[in-house]
Image 1 (cartoon, helix red, strand yellow):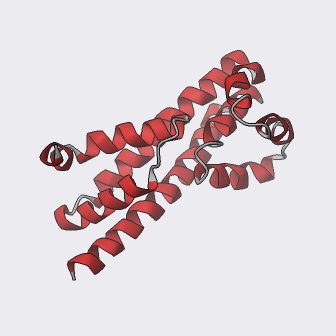
Image 2: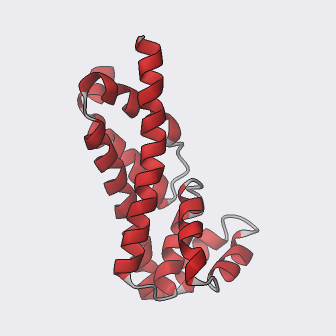
Image 3: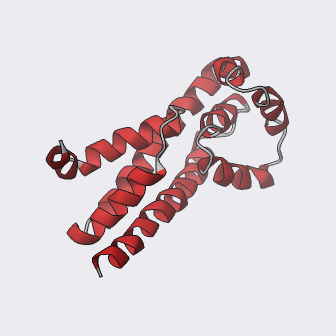
Length: 159
């Protein structure tokens, strides 16, 4: 099993990050740290970054489209997941454009809220181009932080 995982890091990482960013409660920090450490030994840091960003964007676009097609009511199952989610959705739906980037950066590091933010972006009719550019930037910072930390820790462990 270990050989399979190390030979298919990109695929496993893609599926893990996709699930996490789509709202599945799986921890994503340790796999990204491990991928960063592995990238140090096989020099594939850009591949790992691209896989992480691509998976995050796939989840974001899916939730954006759900929000766009079905509005805020599509977020009902996520609202029922916690008691504070309903109030949070109502507050976030009325944010100014200046606060959208700050919100998207913050929720990227809180994967439970990421599907809500993506769905709200679609429900509030944020243009797809603007949402994707902001989402790609936050996904790059998020993935880069975790894998970069793993890359540095990989050097400390190997050295």
